Length: 378
Image (cartoon, rainbow, N blue to C red; front, side, top):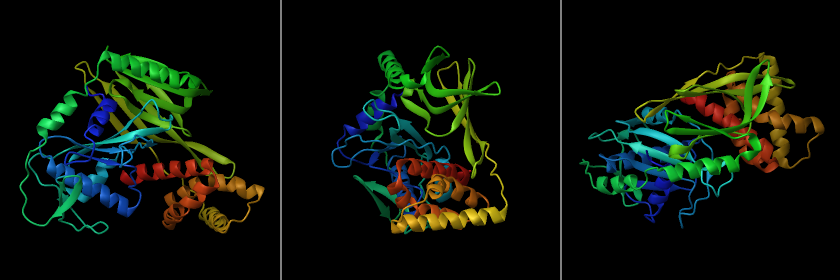
């Protein structure tokens, strides 16, 4: 089993991007340009590595490969995005890798690209400035368009195989990972469990009981063998169920208007461990958007518009408005889910003002965008 933290270090040891891996300071697939560039790199890396995995490491400074981290990104449906825009799409996985020197909310993103062996990957349809039918290859560290017939060549298999072989986990890395987690999350009752005498899962969270049911907030869950952070949230409530074969997480989101909020199930994630040293992760979207009266929604929508204009002009907010601004991202989200399609554009335009206003409100903005990604990709 590959230790993903060690794999990232071994990739970065190659000093610069090349034809089998790329590195990025951050990833933005919420906007059309960022989404198109991400798909371009996926296409190019897949075609340049027809017989081996290729990688994108996210949260690293481009000049000196310094690991600075990014926010936890739990977009389990990123494969749907790739399938929608690319022909002969590769198999994509996105994993969040914790590093001991980073704050608990920051990780390094690792995108693994497994090619559709022997088949040329190309754009299925237009996006941004890239046209349907476009083909990209890596020219050193650059993803370049190719407008002539290409032949897929295997030039990196031996290098990538060597890197992966030198990144395998061992008992020392596993024990260090458990100790690091227990020390770092000692504020929220850290626990661990060994599955199938091999897999180690650590988790921590603030526990509370409601009607004989146990829920957790401030949840952090890691698969220690691979040094992968499976779940992280500062806001949502989570239920955890486990037995000898599986670890199940059900995530709930807190949505509503004014003082009438309710928890709605968002997603179920089940990790099933097998006796042969393998495991599967299955996710299922549970979310059914709550429906509200249109007159109420219009009032909320207009109130949000007025709040953003005040932030834009630098005006002070009243006590009531300060309360409303905390809920602005989630209320825009509810408007969008109730067919106010322009609410998403307004929320994205409000990003810089919410970020400048307070860290708490900006965290709520990121949480709303995360829920939107899940719903859209499904």
